[in-house]
Image (cartoon, rainbow, N blue to C red):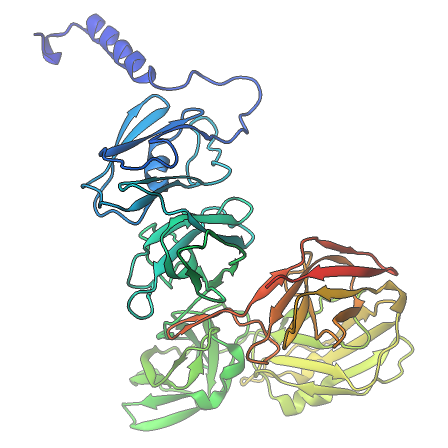
Length: 563
């Protein structure tokens, strides 16, 4: 046999072409015409659905078109779980999947091929997960649990089902007994279940390791456990809302002087800006053996995990200084205490003037509610609020003064609330004298800023009313309208005793109507918890999106609640 070294160049070229043609034989021919938008689907399976006394060491799947092999391997889930690595043997559009070990006797198995499968041509995902069941014994477990995962992108979310045998299953540590996957519209089905009590979680399992990883995965908690008796066949309506659970306390990573008056702090995650004040921070000058308090603490125009503090004294650059922080919360309520780092010092003078970088509502808004108006201004540096108080005015366009309350959420923010009801469809001005906003070094801007806005017309509001349809008594039921146009916008009410509800003074737009049983009476939907485990509150979404138009009340909406 000739080696590569003895093959002539002309023959070597022919050999390369032959190899390329051979490698292309298993691929689809070059596409042409319209882009392929048709998702792949499963056309054949072995063993057939409902097979009993199954004793093979493999199963087979036939797809409607060529699919990416790697996507198939990552999309196969078997319940109950089998230990070890599956082996895939491909032949065109068909794959034979070998089990890593002998299956258990007298067990119903469910094979699920998830929506992560994509076709070869255009990376189209399977539209919905496909499942089939077989049994290694004489009968099939036919019990089923169904529901829906409510999320913007539910496709690919896994359902972890645990048989409640010994205590509370912890998805942080224990893999599920049964697995399924949500489709593109959020629907799921857990099939082939034996009789017993089940606890089910919805998990966006990014690593596909069948464990919940709080730092990267989202999770949905059940509102109840499900008990399936021998005579039961179907449980419906176990729904989920995904949430991000953070159980890790933040850490102070670095403290760097950007100039001699400002220290930029970088944390491991975003903080709750309403929980920090100058008293939460102090400096220890270990060279001079003394403590230095903070004059200001604020968020400013920094990254989500950053904030700024201003020391009350100038620090000698040659000294060794440590910054201490105590009793601050992150955005999920985790509290950390007694953290510290060494400060990187600077003697650079501060020459930056104070500037406004954010206002809420946005400047020039023409749809501000005249009944519940509130105005927030955020600056890039801290200032003396006693002086700032003298530089704020609130008037209409005729210069009539509007009485107002002023607060300072942190040392670089101003919050203004009018003390009288504003008029509808009218223009107003909040003036801020920037010369009254002076930082520690005395820097300021000699200008008067005018924030102008217009209130919405009373006729431009909309509303919705209707009746709740549910059996028996529903204690502490709460209703919410969730805007699809502005994610942060929602309205909350309690229905009347006669089951009627009415939302008034609603800004026009598209909304989802949401109901939940407020078990803890805190007027907020409780999503559940992982450690300790806590059920979510029961909830229901109205089946239709509400398109609420200005000057038109949507009436006689019937909201059916089966739970």
